Image 1 (cartoon, rainbow, N blue to C red):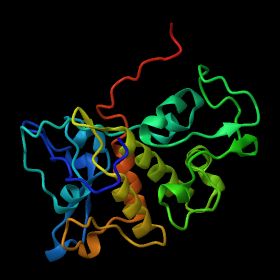
Image 2 (image 1 turned 180 degrees about the horizontal axis):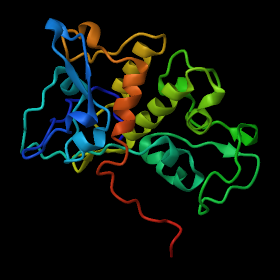
Image 3 (image 1 turned 135 degrees about the vertical axis):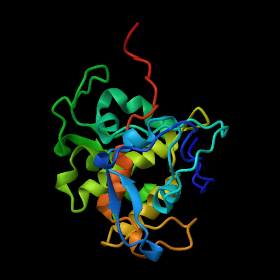
Image 4 (image 1 turned 120 degrees about the vertical axis):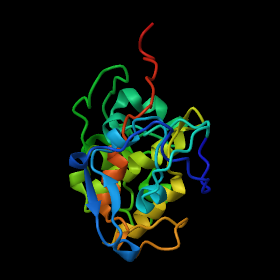
Length: 236
């Protein structure tokens, strides 16, 4: 459930789907030959039909229907889902360990329960252990998702941390996240210093590679698409 290797990216858009209206998308200029590449601002409109478009398909403008793939997209869960204690029971399924705290935590209560960084006893899975080379030493996935503004580049790390967990958790054909953990790390390595991300499956992106802001837009635009409803483990 936590496969690290690159896998074939899922099919893009199912038969019968439609693109968002011009008012709900923006044109990213500068692709090879000066062709524009559509990057959905409101990706839920573009992707909510059941099959996610991979980064390479999004960058190349490939919107051809590919029915019959047997794969249903999961756009994953947001940092707000992964950071709250009542969702910590899902971390193991993503191949990660949640933090522990110096104060009691009620895993059936809602919200953050006034938890702050100073109350962390153990960080759980560290950013560096997850593969985020160059991330702050000793900082866990939870810390940057819960308090991104406490770290330089925190917003990028926040969304990539959620994407890393989503890539580990949503791996079945019935709920498939469109990125692997390695692809998430590739995004980090490419954009952490101000560079741009280009999928390895493309021969090149020219000036149309994604900045950190565009990576965040892609990831956050998919949250909660076909992710299902997790059982409430606190209900008898």
